[in-house]
Length: 157
Image (cartoon, rainbow, N blue to C red; front, side, top):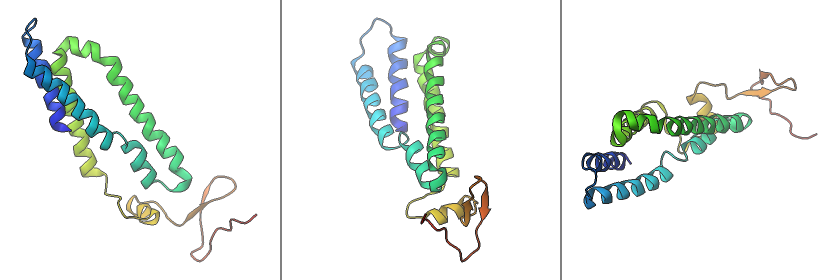
């Protein structure tokens, strides 16, 4: 994914420095990089907001966690969309995509440095991993109250 993010601005920078000239390899690099980015994004960063938030939040907070993840994703997409034209005018189209590539690389560093692996872990282990009490229940008033160690919540009406 990172290589595709570097290929697109490289091709755009070459095409931008030679206006009116057809440079087939640079155009092919842009098309191939864009296709590779879409493919890798769909398998990697694209579903992170859905997959990771559904794994780390307990059932009672899962919908809110997914909502916040998707809202942040949409907000970032809106910022990129609204600022692209002025940014590309200021630092060229190739420069804009180099900036986006740098931001994405910082995102990958954050992902690998601060978000722990969740594969094969239970929700109780996730609660311990993220420092929450796995042994809590929600009362009728919506306030979290600790449950006694041996009690279970009765789901029968």
